Image (tube, rainbow, N blue to C red; front, side, top):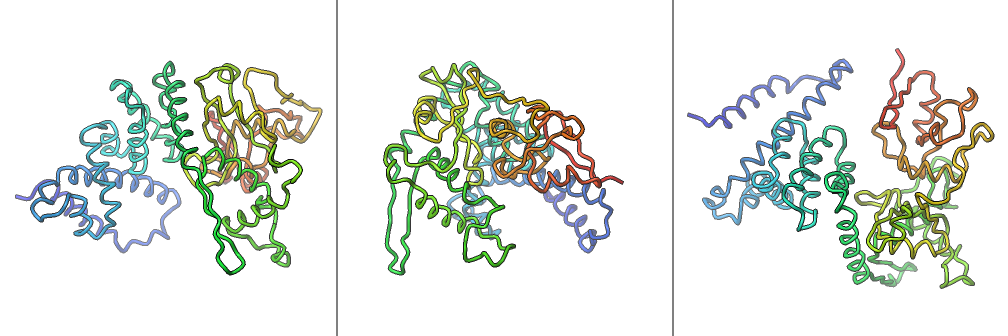
Length: 419
């Protein structure tokens, strides 16, 4: 008699055969949306079942002389060995440690990418974190998976101790960041090599905080509204690739440096904001947030977390704007006296919104526009409460009579086409 799992897979193959020739082009819009959501849940449940079988497939590898189940899976099913090993590590974690994540996958509430992020976040917790706090953190992150996509979930996972154990979170995070910063200083290097064709290859390894500053300065030249390559001046529609724009911007940055100010301040091209509470700024073991690098490749690229000691050092540098919460600040509510948002308000909106607030949009806040939720022409004030960052596309949708916009309790904006 066939095992229930084999029977189920045969039945699933039969069901999929029935719809193999169905053309989704003729599906109603609501049916397409429902199908995509349902297929996503089914995919998550299939992934969990596959990982559960893989976790117990050690004897399959032993039977064939393979190094492990991942090696056998890679050879037999023709998947990349790197992916197979990652699946095996995840399968073992779900089987022995993270049962709540496994249950979420099994029930279709968590997808595979979210499961990878959650388990990685839990693995990254300090080694001395009590088991009950790890279990609580797992439950909270599984709950978040119903609302947040993997990148947002990773950001939440890095600060999950703030939720489950705020009394120890700050010190634990500061110790982790101090260790990372020390390691980054030891590994920092820069090499320049002539290619012999008029170009030089620049290769480096620098800290995330330094990369944030560099990317922020370069993006002052790479705004998508600007065309920075004079060779493309004849074509107003040309759009350079991001690496090419960064390369050109780097050359512009070098040209803009003021030699008379080097090496004292190095002539910064734009503003970087360090956000830190007044209490943390005075503390020896605390953290702060560095704003910038909106499109630099990597997790959580919009904001970097640094130690308070580094924030104090950066606050002494030219072009570093300390936003000390709980201390003196610029006027952020201009009421009806001014129509356009001030630079201080723009920075405050960027710190609050981070990206375009349209639901599902991740355009960086540095490329977004400040929008009056209640129109200024209808007596809407120029204030943070009445302001929201929207990318150019969604800003146009906000003023498009064909769309309705709703501001959700989270602050996000949801659009609906009017019928």
